[in-house]
Length: 245
Image: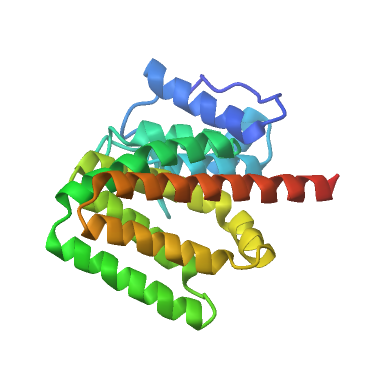
């Protein structure tokens, strides 16, 4: 395997990602092929094993590589999620560009809320109601499950759109959002008085609009909810960045 070149850029793991992706595009690596070991890649690329490990983990998460413990690293064969995997790969490369991901999320979720108001079946409406009730209970008991329940509600709304592609896109975006925002979200919730109560009320309003089959209200509430989240997270990120200078 001769296609690998020493990495000499600052963003080491991203350079490794790009090289492996390019080798796949060029056909030097094909589905089912076994890669060099982590140690061999480190030597060939002249980078640390930690950088190689980070890049391989990202490619594994994106569904491009498969890490088989005790066997090696393989180029994954395309499966039923092959249409989604390039987006997952792109999002991994974009995870430092929070604004881009938030805008994608807004575009998907506003439409998902509108479609859910039109199409949501009784079982998913009941699931939304159950999640909202659990949110209220969790709020009163300290909010330990806030992140889990927030994600569950948004994914249920996407599922209720009855568009399988939209639902899968939402799952892909949310996975990247969770990795990117976990620390920031915790800082935001702890620093902003009344945030958890307001988030609960907005989630309840989204559910009620969908239950009332009010498409425009569902879209409007979801848009305003995500816009507020976007503004608050940007503010916390800016504050955190300024504090580190």
